[in-house]
Image 1 (cartoon, helix red, strand yellow):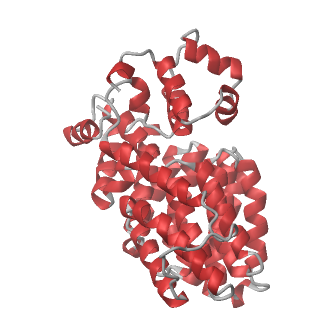
Image 2: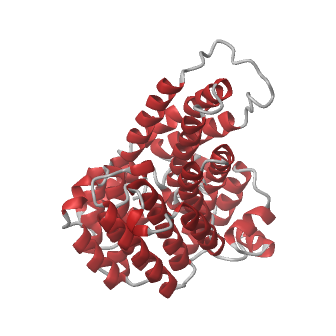
Length: 400
C-alpha cells in the first residue's frame, strides 16, 4: 500500500479494478461509462476532478473515496469489511445442499432454534452492529440451508429470513452485486408463500436501487405490493399493510431516483394512508413500518429528488414524532445520514455535521462501515466550517 500511495489516481483505479477482478468493459458498464473512458482514466489521459465521479468509482470498487485520493492506507474498518464480505461470498458459493455434500460435523438445528438465530441476527442488524452480523451471516444461512433440507415446509421461513438479513447487510456494505445473489436466493426460497415473497421483495427493491436499476425497481415493487395488498384496505391486517406499504415506499424511492417526482409523491402518500392504520411501534416482517417510518422515507425521497428544503422540513417533523423513539438505532442513523445529505445540498455544513455526529453516536457502524456514509463524512470534513469533532472522526477513519 505504501507504493500504491505514490501512484496517480488513474493508476489506483486500475489497481483496485484488478483487485476486484473486473474487466475494463464490466467496470465501464457498472459506471455507465464507455470502455474508452475507463482506459483513458487509468492511463492518466483523462483526469478525475469531480467528487461525485470519484464516489461512484469508489462505490463500484467497494472502497472509500479517500483510498482513491491516496490519503491513507485502508483503515482497519475497511479491511475488515472487505474480508467479511469475502467470507460471505465464499459461503454463498459452496452449494452444499444441491450438490449433496455432507454437513460434516455441523449439527442440523431444529426449526425453532433456527428461528431464534435469525431473530437474533435481525436484532443485531437493526442495532447496526454490522461487524457482528458479518461474523454471523455465513453460518446463519448455511445452518438455515441444512434446517430447510431437513424440514422443507417449516424450515422455509428461517431460510428466507437468513438470506434477507444477508442481502440487507450487503447493501449497507456497498456490495450490491453480492446482495443481489442473496436476494435471488431469498426470492426462490420464498416462492409459493405470498407473505415471504413480499418480504423478500423488500430487499429486492433495495438491491435494484443500489445497483442503479431504479427504473426496473419501480414496476417490480408495485407488482409485489399489489400482490400482497388486501382487497379492501380498511380490512387489511397490520402484517399485510406493513409489507404493502414498505414495498410502495421502495417504489417511491425508485421513482425519485430516476426523476419521476410526481409518481414518488403519489406512492409515498399511498403508503402513508396504510401507515396510519398500522401505527408506530411495530415491526411486522422487519419492516418497522408506520407513520414515522413513512415520514423518514419522505426525507429520502426529497433528497433523491434534489429538494433539500423539503427534505429538511420532513426531517425536523419526523424526529419530533413520538414514534421516532420506536425506530431501531440503525434505521435512525441511516435517516440522519439522509438528513446530513440534505443539509449539504442546502449548503449548511454546520447542521450537516451536527446530524452526522448524532448518527455516529446513535449507531457508530452506520458511519464507520458504510461506504456511502464515509463519503458524506469526507465531504463535510473538507468544509472549512466543519467542527473539530467531524475532522477528528474523519482523521480516525482515514478520511482526513
